[in-house]
Length: 178
Image (cartoon, rainbow, N blue to C red; front, side, top):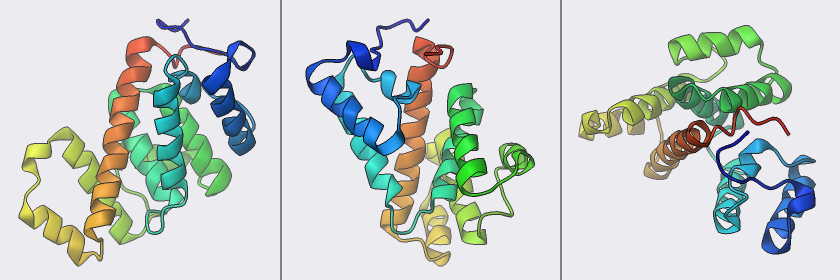
C-alpha cells in the first residue's frame, strides 16, 4: 500500500480524470507511474508533457532513453522502474533479458552505438558525481557529435528519473499492485 493517497481511474474526477483519459488513449491503462502523481494533477500533467517530449525526441533514441532510466533506477533500486523499462526494451526494441542484465552490470550495451554508450556513461557518472563534470567532459561528448541540446536533454532525462525513483521509493509506490 502506498504511503500517500493514489487514485484509481474510477476515483478520478475533474482534471485528474481528463489526464487519465489521455493516458489511456496513449498507453491503454493507468500505470503506477501515473498513479504516483495522481494526488497532484498539476504534477501529473507536467510528467505527461515530459514523457511526450522524450517520446518524439529527434536524436535521443527510445533504447538510449530506456537505458538511461534502467541504469539510474538500478542505482536507486527502484524495481518498478527497472521492470517497466526492461519491458520496453524487450517488447519494442527486441532486446533479450540478458542484454538488459549486461547493461545494468556494465552501463554499456552492444545494442547501442558507441556515441550512445558514451552519452549514457556521461549521464550515469554525472548523476553520481555532478561536480566531476568539466569542460573536457562536455567537449568529449561534442566530439561524438552530441549537441548541447542533446547533452542537456539526456542529463535532464536521467535527473528526472532519479527524482522519480526517489518518489517511488519514498512513498512505496512500486510495492503497490493495482
